[in-house]
Amino acid sequence: MPSLIDIRRRVRAVKSTQQITKAMKMVSASKLRRAQQRIIGARPYARQALRVMSSIARRVDPEAHPLLRESEVPGAPPLLIVISADRGLCGSFNSNILKKAATFLEDTPDRQVAMALIGRKARDFFVRRRVDVRYEAVNIFQLVKYSHAQELAASAIEAFAEGRVSSVYLLYNEFKSVMSQNVVIERLLPIPRLTPENGGVEGPQVDYLYEPSADELLKVIVPRHVEIQVYRALLESAAAEHAARMTAMDAATSNAQEMVDKLTLYMNKVRQAAITREIIEVVSGAQAL
Image 1 (cartoon, rainbow, N blue to C red):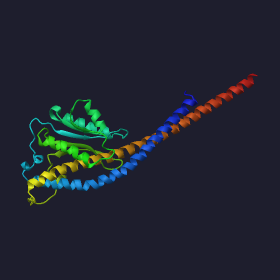
Image 2 (cartoon, rainbow, N blue to C red; image 1 turned 45 degrees about the vertical axis):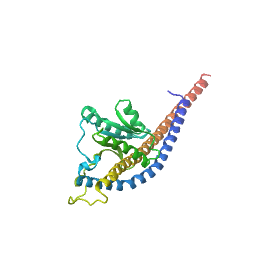
Image 3 (tube, helix red, strand yellow; image 1 turned 120 degrees about the horizontal axis):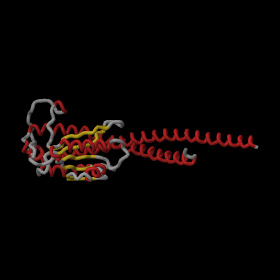
């Protein structure tokens, strides 16, 4: 049976841990508000940009721009952009992403997949497994900037346009609510052709009038569309990470309180038993005299 000193020491340790988890929960809640506002503001623009770009891609010649081609380059692997967190203590946030990425590798023929790793957790996990890493970035989720998306998008666009990868996919946690994050894998390149069933626009397939020429417009809007979609995925992942960490720290704080209550009750029982034993010893000694 542990002594009262050991029990008190453990209670103090659990209370200290509880203070840390409670502080982390409050910090994540504060960051979540800002991240949620940013993603709510970015979603409508990104979704409408995807609809417009998909509509244009279905109307123009696929050879009008390198990012519109749909035929895969023989022997070129797909590029998977894995967006994870830089830190842990956020529940199953990182493990769900890593499991989905591992499944993608297993389902790909010959397991030849090029990877772009965003976040320290993804980088540390896959670098040890000797995968083909084309791009990596860490410590960008303190403050996600559009320049981060531009740099990542430029790397993906260059690899796809030069035929070094056959396609580009985004893998990230989509922010649904504080209690729910959904792992999403979606194709970034070539530009997906949406249908009315998956969010496309219904209507007759009429061509557009371009001013200036279609080639000049595509050179500008297609790369910008890729940057926007990457930026949205980074914002989604940032908001989902804060939500997951807040939920995990709330559960940890509650568990710590339950442990303190149980240890306190056990400590009182041990102290009561010690007092009872001392009384019995005193009484027994008095009777012996």
